[in-house]
Each structure stands twice: as C-alpha cells, then as structure tokens.
Image (cartoon, rainbow over all chains, first blue to last red; front, side):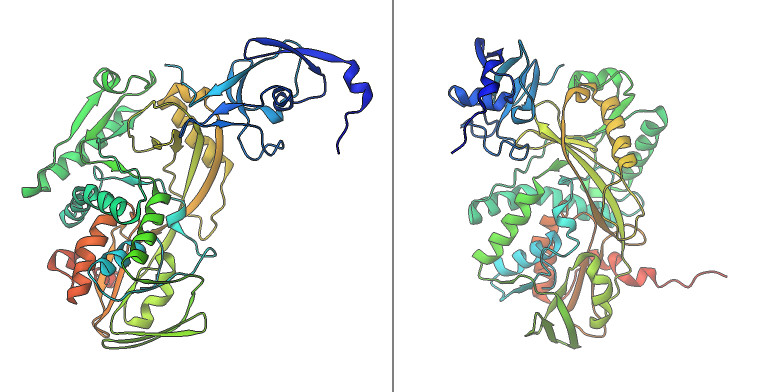
Length: 97
Length: 363
C-alpha cells in the first residue's frame, strides 16, 4: 500500500544498531530503521517480554531504546543521523550512582 | 454506601465480607476522584502530634495492612504491591530536621502502650542507608511503621473484593436525593430508588453537600496536590515521604499542598518546584525522564483529621471522610466496617465526630 519516494533512497546514512552498522534512508526515524531488521526495540522491565514499535507517533512508549547513550528514548520520535548509535533497551534503565 | 473511592470501597468491602447486603453507589468517572490521583503511601510517622487518637488509628491501620493486602490478593487475585520496610522523611535544612525531631518526640511521648520508635539520621548515617542522596541533604527521620501500596491496584482490588463478596456496584450513580428517617434511608440515584436501614456516606468532597440530608456534617474543602511520574528505572531508592519508587520501577515525586479551590489542573511553577527539590534530594534524578504529571484534590477537614460519626438525628447514617484513604484503608475495612455492622462507632472514634467544629467564634 505504501511506497517510498524514489529520491529518498538515494541519500542513505549509516547508523549502528546493536553494534552493527546499517545503511538506511536519511528520512527514517530510529524506530523505522529498527523495523528494517528484527524490529525488536526493547524488553519490558515488568515481564521481560520483547516489544516492537507500535504507534510510530510518540504515544505508546513501546519503542523505547538507548539512543546515543540516552536510555528509554522514544525511537519513533528521533530522526536517524550519520553515526547514530541505537541500542536495544533491555529491561529497566539503570540510574547513575 | 455512597462513594466508590478508596474510603467507600474499603468500608463497602469490609461490610460485604461480614456478609452484609451492600449496594455501593458510585458517581463515576466524572467524580473528582481523589482515589485516582494519590501517592499511595501507608504513612505513619507524621500523623497525629497532639492527637493520640489519630496516631493510634493510623498505626492500627498500618499494623493491619499486611493482612488486608494478603486477603485482597487471595480473594481477588489483585496484588496491590504493599510494602512495609519503613520510610524516610528527608530534610534539606537543619530547621526541617529539628522540626521533625520535635514532632516525632511528641509522638513518642504520647504513644502510650502502642510504643513509637524513631530515628533521626544525620547526612553520614543516612548516606550509609540511602547512598544516592545529594550533598545538600542534611538528614532524615525514619520510622519502621511506614509503607506504601500501588493505589490504583488497591482501588481495583477493593472493587473486585466487594463484588466477590456479593455486593452490588452501581456505576454512574450520582445521588439526586436522600430521604432520611431513623434506620430508614431512601436514596435516588440515576433514576433508581434504593432503600436501606443503614447508610454510609463516604463521597469525598461530595459528602459536603450530601451530609446535611442525613443529619451529618462534613465541612470539607479541596486541597490540591500535584505529582510527577518518571520513566521506569531499576530499583534505586527506599521509601521516602516525597519521592517513592513504584513496584514496576517508575518514580513518583509529590507532596504539594495548594489552596486552589476545585481547580484540579497542574501548574508549571509548582511542578518545577517539586522537580527542583527532588533533584537536590537525589541528584541522579537530573538524568531521569519525566513522563507524566497530574493533580488531584485532597479531601480536607478544617483540622486535617478524619470525620467519623453516626447521625444523632437519623441513627443508622454514618459518615466517613479523611485525606488518607490509602493509609487508613485497613482501619476502614476492618474496625470501622465492623462498627457500622454493629450499629455504633467505638469510643476511640468519638474524637473524630463533627461536633468538634461547632465552636462559636470569639468576638
């Protein structure tokens, strides 16, 4: 149903998802970039079950990830950038002591 | 029962579990609903200086809370995450700490047979038990009696529990009329007439208007409180009075007291003051993200104490009102509900009758 505009594919950026460099179109959000792969953004702090992006518009908080070192970031609200480090959020974030 | 918040649901649950036939009339989601906005503490350490009856009533509830939590879990399957590991009241100035020391000493002296032990901790002693405090923290008081629950699970558990015990729950049932006679009450709500030999009024701020219809007196006013909630984080802090961590990891930051009438909206300057104090208390919070804020209206009497009474004019009508619906839930579910079932409130509760407000003002 949806198709990408052809001109966007021409300008990829490289992001690092869980340590693996991936080339993605420049106009994706971090959540959309993750969906190109296995789509798993986090495991929950309550039951430990895996989660994937759901609403893609900042409401559901299921796409929380650690982005450039900031934990529990809504990946669907962050546009990708060259060199961005996107890591799965595993359980509850730790606080700095 | 009129009122389906924490006070009404706790008493209703307590009546239903004794086998009484209970109908609970609940105004619904349009109600002011203090039960949906509170902080969830089962807090003992600052309750009742100068009023031993309140100190004892609070302590009794705290002592019976583990039993209530277990009973609700067994009856309903809902775990309201009760914990009782004691609580810290963290002070940022020497004055605050000294005031707490004086208040707790009053409570210790007046406690009588109940016994009341507290600790005053300086920065170093506190840091050994709560390592994440900031350098500005002067110290804290601690008592082992304090605890907390998840207040939304508690409301759900009480509602599930009263249904399990055969009570009837009427949602969206705003009370339109109360016709009272001794041991004979006729209530109209949502176009339906209800009749009962006993009536318990626990409608929060709504009790103010309803009380006179049953010969009761509830001079209540709203006192607004605002709360900030953070993202879920790994276990980081023990229970403190103004900042707590929920069982699922979120931190709540609260404890504002505002005279704002019936306005239950949030105010940025109050929220930023709460956040600023929280960051001075626990500097790690600077990096933790806020996800929500809300305000709710406490149900406050002129002296801050609960109001409990049976109507002299229309015996059989009872009033229950307080601003600590979580802390006192076990007192309401057990001794208060048992007294209503017997038909008379015990002498220990006489101090809480509304006649204490009937004092002529001096010229």
